[in-house]
Length: 188
Image: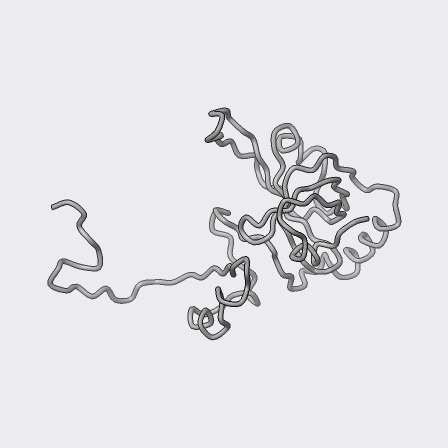
């Protein structure tokens, strides 16, 4: 049974699920060093969306990451078997046991029809995953908030897993007081 992306918030972190979704975006492969083993790791992030209108990030590792552009393709339905649900940066997924591009099942046709009729038109969506280090990507205009909304919407108080927002600000004034400015000098 496939879990809809819109229902992933109800899945306990650490559990594995099967999902089928449209691949909206595939990031470039990134190399990083494992803190535990000191080995170089390859990773790529996919942005997935389904007919709930909700996006989630799926991280691929190793050969799956290196071959993602070639094997998966963009705007195609892909079924992912046994992806692990994480609460890192909101809700995110990682490491499918297997993936199947355009599997011959009824869910594939339903998803393709939704993508053709609604999904590809850029309707506003909700994202379960934060962009964390995504290189300056802005949230959709409808998802942007004012700093005052943090208090007004009780962000950080009502959600057990926390709330994630992004905002852009410019300093217009820095008060210079007797101590030397808006910073702390650690060592004189």
